Structure formats: structure tokens, C-alpha cells
Picture 1 (spheres, one colour):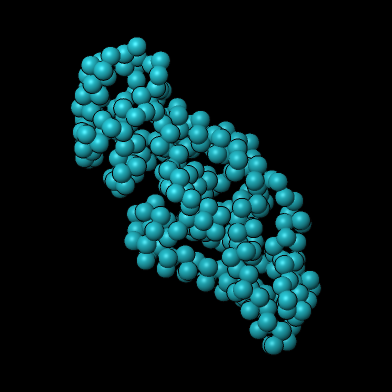
Picture 2 (picture 1 turned 45 degrees about the vertical axis):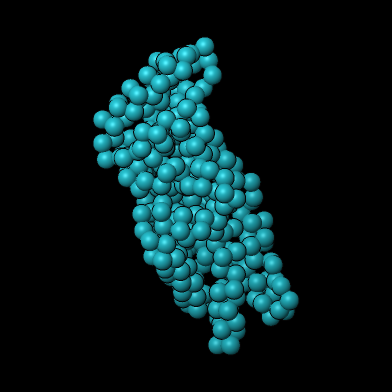
Length: 282
């Protein structure tokens, strides 16, 4: 059993080593000690404890934006290695940011980011690798659970009480799905990830803003602009391909706007074919 004196010496040396390793961070000594002490793993001798890496996680949990830059510089490559192991091309640019968000952003229910569970028992890079692998497997499983045809029905059959909209969905289901998929493929990886964070992970705009290093107003505006561009692009595609009257086209546009979030959320979370063909994947 390690003595309190041994732990205090280890914390002091870890604090100084971490300050040298991450000179841009300014973590209070008392805050670091409280954070690290609460996570001391039983059965691990102080000299084998990776306490200095708890300095970074303490800064991350404290909301220090400079800690995000440090995390990216040292550990983002770990996420890339995890994604590269999967035979099917999980979207590296998109999935990397989803994984990063799950590690570093508080949950909608107020639960702490997953990085809060790191206790220094082993290297932080190895811990991130394990956590990222589990998340990547979950993402891939989600993408494959629902066949494309069934997914399309789920996304487009919710007709509501409007018989005209129900008729449009039934008649133009294939064209609707194709237009949405094409519009999503035309987005860059950052914009698709933004939509995933907003529609699938349900992150509020203040957390999205923190993740991207922008103000929440800017984040909200960007989400709105991306959705508007998608809606406009789908409208243009359908107007060019469907032989319909002006009033019916107006109803189609109304349908597009009313179901934008539902349709995008379904396709982004479950369409493996869309991910396989997404641009900017490395």
C-alpha cells in the first residue's frame, strides 16, 4: 500500500513534468492534485502511475481550449490508427471528429466526457486507442444495422395527417432518397460531421461551438446554413428530374423543409453506402 507521502511526491513530480510537457496550459496545482488523487488506481505503485497525463485531462475537463489543441497534436493520430484498422472505409474525417466529440464533450444528459474516466493506470494513448476502438465498432454496427431500402421507408413513410404529402412520399420515395444522398455526398467532411453532431449526437450549439473553437452563435448559423444549402440542392435536383406541376413542386418543397432533420438524421447515421462514397476520406 502506497503511503500518502509517496503519492504526494509523485503528484508533485508529475505536476512539474506536465508543465514542461504542456507549457501552454495553466492548471492550478490544487485542482490537479484533487483531480489526480480522486483517480489514483488501487494496486498501482506511484512510480508506475501516469499521473502527468492527468494534467492534460484535468485541463480538458476544465474547458481549457488550449488543451484541445494539445490533445489534437499528441493523440489525434491514435484515432486515425484505430479507423485505419477497419476493412470497410469508415469515414476518417467524419468519424475522427465524432470520436473526438464523444471523448471530450459532455453528454446531453450532463454525463461527463469519456476522457473523465481515464485514471492514469496506463498510457493515455493506449486508453484512447481502446475507447476509440469501441466507439468505432459501435459506429460501424449502427451503419450496417438497417438495410438501405428499409431505411428509406423509415425515413420517408412517416406521412403524418396530410394525405397529399403521404401521396408525394409514396410516389417519389426513390427520387427523394437519391436527391438527399447526392446532396449529402456533395458536402465536405466538416459539414457532414457538423450535421452528425447536431442531428445524431444531439449536441447543443454551445458544445458544437466549443468543439470547433467558434462562438455558439456562429455554430448555430453554420448548422442553419448547411441545412439550407442541402434543402436548396435537393429542391434543385427534384425540380430538374421530376415532371410535375408548379403547385405539386411547391408541395414537394414544403415536404423537404418539414422533414429535413428526420431524413438527414436517418441517412447520416445509417447509410453505409453514403459513407463509402463520401469525399475527403483519407
